[in-house]
Structures are given as C-alpha cells and as structure tokens.
Length: 312
Image 1 (cartoon, rainbow, N blue to C red):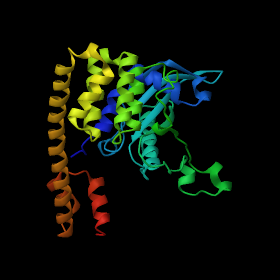
Image 2: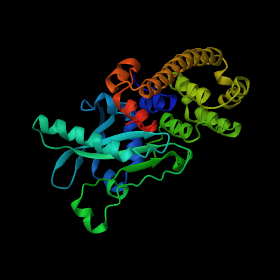
Image 3: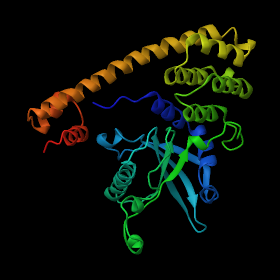
Image 4: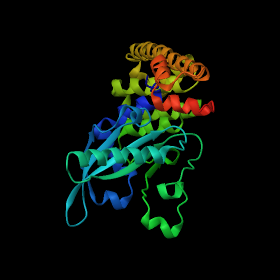
C-alpha cells in the first residue's frame, strides 16, 4: 500500500507537470551561473523509469531534462526535483539513492552517465536545517572531502517568495499563485485571502476557470476557513464580473473537494489501520514476509515500525 498523497503534493505535481510552469520556475529559481549556461526553452518533464516502488513512496519522481553547455560542448542536464512540506532527515540519502538508480540505468544500457543536479523544494513552517551537502551530513573531515563521495542540492524555500516579485517567474500568474498558497498553507488569514483573491483578479486568473478551481480547492482543504467567510472574500476580491460563474464554480469546488476529501480520509484510515495491524503482528513475533502480506505495507515501512518497537 502506498501512502496517501496529500493536497500539497497533488498541487505540486499538477503544477510542475506543466512544462510552461517548469520553464518559468527554473528561470527564476536556479542559480544565475546555471541559467546562463542552459537552454530553459528545451526543458521537459521526463518520466523516471529507474525509480523503484519503495523509493517512489518518498520522492515526487519529477525529473526535468534540458540542454546545457560548458563552452565547448552541449550536454543533457537532469534536474531532480524533490518536494518537502517538512524537514526530512533522510533527504540526502533519498537523493543519493535516486541518483545511483539513474546511473545504474545508464550503465545497464551502456550509455554515458548523465549529469544530475538535485533540487529541493520546501514549503514547511520551520526553518530548514538539513546540511546542503552529503559530506556535511556525515561530518567528513576537511582533508578527506576531496576523496569522498559528495554532492550538493539546490534549495528553494517558499518563505523567500514574494507575490509582488512578478518578473522573477515570467509573470506566470498561476505559478505565482501556487507558490504563494504553498508559502502560507494552513495559515491563510482573512487579509492574506483578500490579497490572493485580488491577485487572481488583477492577473486575469479569474478567467481561467480550471486553474481557479484547482487553487480554490487547495485553499479550502488546507486552511481552516468558514465557507461563508470564504464566499464573502471571493465575491469582494474577484468582483462583480464573476457573479454569473461563481455559483456553479463554488458548487464544483465544494462537491469535488468533499468527494476527494472523503476518499482520501478513507485511504488514510486504511493506512493507519495497516500500521496498527503491523505493530500487533510484529509484537506477536510474526516474520516480516507474513507481516507484509497481512498489511500490504512496503518492507521499508515494516522495518521502520519494527525499529520503533525495538524488535530485533
């Protein structure tokens, strides 16, 4: 059984599966030295066939391929995107394993190893405290660093994003809105809601009904906002020109959102039940294979629970 994908990840994947959003984002988020040496227009989302099921539970599985140059040659550059809404101490290990699997695929098909740059996209509340490089995470002495395996990831924190910085991401209103909503997820005050709705209207997003529904559903199910208050803010922020579409739009948002919310709730409940079953089975001495068959949990999750129970 795979863990339930939450609304954060759904929004992230939907947004960055669209190549226009990807191109605008990397143009504003990558270091200037990389921007100057890549063709952002060549970017496209590539399926990562090398990702095994156990790893896919932890990674967003979003790989962006684009053309780069070093002055003498052109080559393919792969940006490995990982999305986090919390600080994950295992992030460097996950990124290392992901890169290894891609290189293993290159080796197996006898092609030249690709160039991979890990990119961590973070929108959690706390300060990100994970070391930026693999060598730092395992405290390698300075005099040994040049001999040891190492890599660094590029880091983007939505807390550093400002909705007024319209030129940074190609004036992509939908992408700007997503970054703003992820930044303030779960803590959207009335004032912030009013600001985002004014932006919807000013930027023209109010006319993009499909995108507007996606954003509205995210607002509803990641923030504690009363429906009446939200409806009032919507009407005030989006203006009279939307009065004809708002009733049907609101019904679509609430109906589809509630259905998905109930479905995800049932899945989450089943997942939690599987965890409890796993704990009981391990406590009674069941072997790992039997526990996996009983619960449907991946072996990594079973081993994690086993470790937490301090069972050898």
